[in-house]
Length: 177
Image (tube, rainbow, N blue to C red):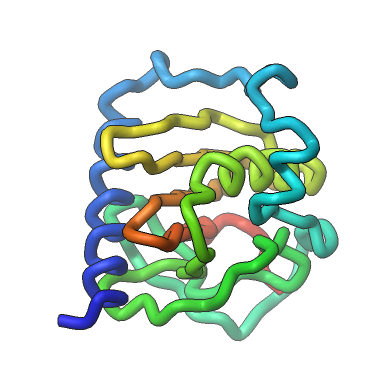
């Protein structure tokens, strides 16, 4: 098994574990955004990869992209045009599990990716349901909702070796274009 397939298998397992954990936590999951004091200083943010909004998520459109049922829920097989990008990321084959996007970023940047992605999604009109982490293995899980109502997005950033694997689940009730 290649190292990247092991990464994908680990990320898939982490996402499933995080989903079960979040479901079990119910209302105890934090809904508050991190305070400015928990965000990395500007100098640290410039050194680490960051989520950069490449435009807002479209409010409505029809797409030819497919959908897949997962343990997390039904997802789009791809991200829509305008979904916030993660600087320095490269696409990675998601052969070990379904995802709307499976990315790799060089270095251990899980925390900064999660925090910057939270800011980019909020700027695009999403509300943070929870930001969990670091979990035992150092991963962070960001859960966001809307627009429209029922549109769920989950971003998992997990350090694995010298890279950070990022898995994005973009819910089937979300607009896709």
